[in-house]
Length: 515
Image 1 (cartoon, rainbow, N blue to C red):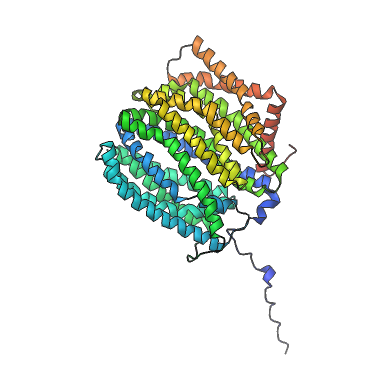
Image 2: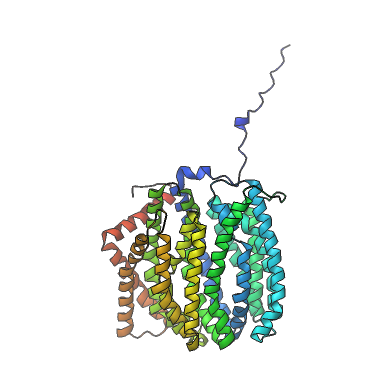
């Protein structure tokens, strides 16, 4: 009687490959398409987050008072500084390095966790000092509750870095959108129930908790037991340079809130802080996607200077053609924007918004300098450039403080346009594939469209009277958009930029065409 042959043993080749959350070799095969699709997911996430934040701001501005926002701004200008150290630059080390191992990333995770514990303890120590400095006892319990969020935030740094390293932008988009929805729901519910300034505290803590939970679930990575690694010193040096640059940049960007709150009081700080946040919301929608997509993509091209320079040129050119006309339109309609989003009791924020808007014209480009140098591994240059640029911004803030919030806004704009940005452009061109000249060329790409938009808005406002801010937007936005589009179509470079956008869309849809 014949015996049936046993089924063959499965070969190792037939077994499914084990997912390696640190591997990136597969990205090199189709980097353009991965970057393009990542850009779409990132933009969708940013638009969604922007919409949620804008709606939340509209309702919160009506449920809370300028003093409530001023009190919260007093503590975030200091506690936000502490929050910088949750990363200590180690996420960029994970993203930028072409090769990194499980023990190395685990070591970075435990360092980030230890830093988070120290952050929470430092916040508790600073709480009574902050209340004493501002003469506001209400700040003491607010800061203590915020320390919970700081404790949680650092334990998700490496999980997000791993997802970004893998260029899994759909997962990042889901995390960002879900976290902001959860925190906005918490904040609005608390505000509606009469929790006043506590609504802002609970909103921020809930964001950290939701974001950390989601990133742990999505990353597919878990840390190993802590242990020292031979390459740890290089990784920590990489992170220390970025941390130093981030700290200096933060001090420069938040000293205005600190000094205005101390010498002008919470009410004027509330007007200034709302104007600044309202302006930066759309600007962040440009800067954040650039960093999220550009750093991992450009890091993979660091060995190919020609492709690196071309990708930088394409990104910066398109950013200029979109961001600069949009910011100019916001400046020209600042009074309508403040009235429509914040409400009539925030009228004093309008002139501050317009003044700060001038400084943000080049913000996407000056911010990109650090991202470009990080992708090249030039972390020491990042530190030096951000330190010097921070000193310039601090000088501007102190120069304008005598004239109150509007004086600070005007001084920041003057320094940003004529001193700080030219210096940063010089630094990015000192070495690497990109030159200082390339940065100026990218900026000039948006100048013509900006002038066209400003002319259209000015003419329409001069010859017509609009019954409401909403009517003004409805009548000026379409002509302004058409003016910017017409200017783009009038030049060969502009038409090339539109062809690149068409290629971008085709690539995302899976049908790449000739650029």
